[in-house]
Length: 149
Length: 263
Image (cartoon, each protein chain N blue to C red):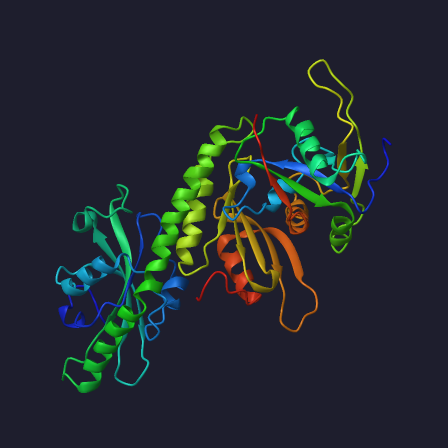
């Protein structure tokens, strides 16, 4: 439901552009910082549709993201485990939450029921933002290569 | 002490050379002082071949000595680390020269006693040459790392061209990055990424979840993130901030993190 926290056992999926992926294919922490004028960090709830199996969920959500963003074949999608990330960040930064924020259809895009946001992250370009981004990267180890149609 | 025009001093073995390829970026005094002649690993060879050319040259065309540090490991021995300036014409085909006017180099020279050629002086010469040959692979590593960085930055530049939201690499960030890694030539190879603002971020990962991330901001400053764990500690220390690049090196040393190599 809109505004609800995602379950701790679930995952957020985020597209990572190639400039923020290291040569060893791990994700740099700078991929997990707020951008200018953002209050929430967009992710997509991987398990929003409980009727799909694990493989289908990833495919489905990747397609939803790709419908709204320009995807590079050199990019990837990173899974951010909700509960583990919140617990890990609590050492340095309290108040991080994963909130379900589905997007309505627009004239250019279909609705996206999986859309969510990580809220409570430090402000753009702050030193704390850099530190928390690197801590999130420690949790976001599972990735999926981007597929471009 | 060696001095310009003093040919008698230049009788030893050149162990290695560190260099900066522009007149405006010179090795720092701290780096010069950190060179340990006995280990022979504090030196970055310009290239193995050219290092030997310097050795053969033996400074007959006396370079301008900019700075000098002297060590005495044993009584009567005399190792000199010289910061010298060579005119570009001497190394015209040097790939790193990039049109700069000259080359500042640090050269390590052992000065044999001039009153006599004693056995110990000779053995020091032999030993230093042997040290260089034994560690040539290690000494050449910084140059290979430098080339890898160039390739990686070109790859990032291509990615940025395809991304409307990403700026091209900022020149001042790039310059500061290379200044930094050249000042710690035996550091582990860092992973590089390009932020949307055009700044380079370099990340070094060590053992035990040690982690150093530096966003090169220009003006010889960097935004850093350091994760470090002392052996006796249960938890990892995590800190972030902005510091000068020289200050950052001191912070890293204070944590005993070895990813930036020996001093």
